[in-house]
Length: 386
Ligand SMILES: NC(=O)c1ccc[n+]([C@@H]2O[C@H](COP(=O)([O-])OP(=O)(O)OC[C@H]3O[C@@H](n4cnc5c(N)ncnc54)[C@H](O)[C@@H]3O)[C@@H](O)[C@H]2O)c1
Ligand SMILES: [Zn+2]
Image (cartoon, rainbow, N blue to C red; front, side, top):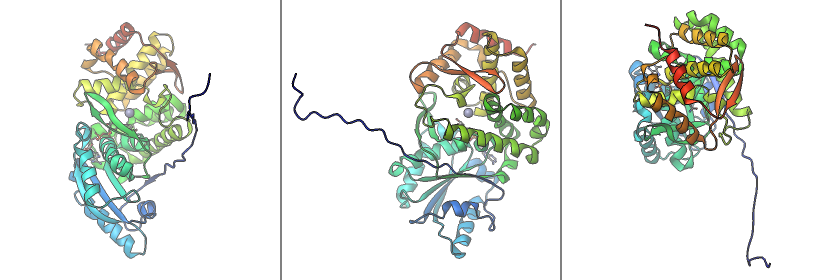
């Protein structure tokens, strides 16, 4: 048979190199601290706009002025840091992700202040604000430079390390989003003292998660240090946060699948139920607490299907509770609705369902189906005895 005239087939594989730079520091906006100015120095356009989480702004009302003063001072010192064109306050918490509002705010300011791809969007806030502002920054001009300044334990030990941005839509967590590594992350522990106890503790579920997946020594450390973490002793809490951040970053940058093209998503251990519980509760359960419940549920399930030793599940459950984290919620009783979370989780990634289950503290396996009756029995088993 003759080939069709002008037919052509092209098939290329290509690679793009990314960098992901993370700095943990103290008092980032102090005049002597060069971390942020070094991150921002490589700017030919020299413009920046900043977005501050409303609750961070309430707790640190001088923050916008401090950022402007810091950049002004570094400019006077002869550094090529950007001019700060605008500081805006954005809705804090999951509200930031429950509409397009924050994203539109970023797009509008980007247009109004002549922000181009070599300019900077600085996002200061919890994981939700980083996700929503980040989405706006990756959409404007198909991506302007995003500097994340995480202000919660969870944003520091996990969310800011991610290469994902997103918001919730159609009652589904992170339904709209993009993959894009940030220009840099600058984490400043000085933000943490103003967090509520609930949100301070919530961030440690992600540290327990990554310890369970990758680092038994970190698990031992968290187990031992839980009382000091709960008491908010930063000398004890920060090493755990930083170790967790490093493990997340290492996985994302070195596991070979940063943009989740494969079906396995080990960093989302405990997350299928967590995401569903968040949306079932109308986002009143904080992400970190939902992850704690999700971990407890999947550990109980893993015991019941013979994958995980009961002693390990008991240890993990006790560790979560010693961090003042919940391991149960009344919504777990809504088993039909909860089980729909499995299909939503699969649908988000495509392909066959792939759930990470623990085999022991430090190692995991992939499961491609979850027995709904065993999920329901596991949920019932977690309920407190009355
Ligand atoms: N992109 C990713 O890879 C990734 C990874 C993990 C989690 N996340 C997302 O992160 C979000 C959770 O982040 P979170 O736990 O930081 O919660 P959050 O952003 O909802 O913040 C918790 C609360 O604390 C307030 N707050 C933040 N910093 C404060 C401070 N220093 N002082 C006083 N109040 C402060 C916020 O306004 C909010 O009300 C979820 O939406 C989750 O899906 C994203
Ligand atoms: Zn998470």
